[in-house]
Image (cartoon, rainbow, N blue to C red; front, side):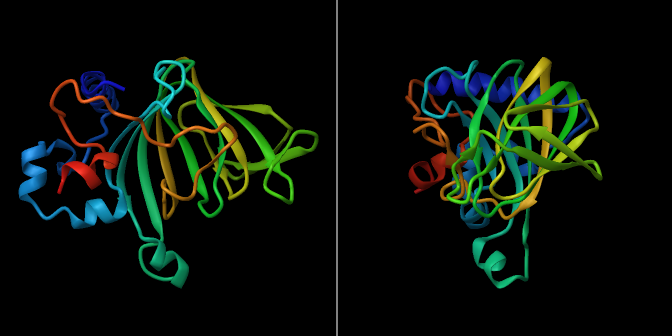
Length: 226
């Protein structure tokens, strides 16, 4: 993705988030220079901040996701069973923009439609080897009620509705009718190791530096915060 395109998406996404009355934390607004002048060790360690991805496929409008991680624990706490065991994200899934089929080995997550169109999730259970079970059913908690769907069934969430996805549940999702603001509340999130995709794709975008970044992405921290 070109950096200029990422900058445009950041501005559009931030405005969309504000339109629902959601206020991002102060570090969301730090410039690159401010980031370099501050102690950002916690942000870097925990992958907190902006995350715009096209999954390396160069077609963001069709295959992509806008994310901002507001808080996150660390794997050491999760493994010890005490400390900060949770994470929170705010995301935007554009109308008909697919976040591709994937599952998590460790993370359990609540996916919440906070406003806009319907949030559609395509769901599968996993076989014992972790592969997609394309023949059986899949059961997930939806706002306190267990819902069972056939393999590949579509769960459609209206604003205010949510689903809990436990480790191993395969899922893809997109907005229907309009762009969707999504909240994610989960156990500790590790995007470097805990995403298993059906397709051989990247988790983070490959960035072409055609202009200066408006804000750094979490995937920039290792190279642009040195």
